[in-house]
Length: 78
Image 1 (tube, one colour):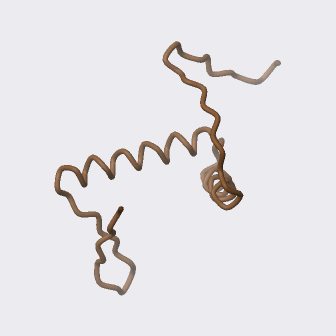
Image 2: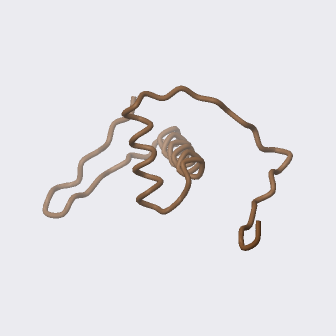
């Protein structure tokens, strides 16, 4: 199609099929829309973020959230 570009698939790509609850699928679509990207890219970013957090926690890091005007709170992941 003229004017469109296609990202070629790499040999290392793996196609997955997952079942998500309606709430999770809606949250994923909301994230994708907010960042003007695809649901596939939102999944990639979400997984990358989760991996980063887990690696940091495995190394003994603490994850803090600071909201304006509030003291820092530690996020605890199970």
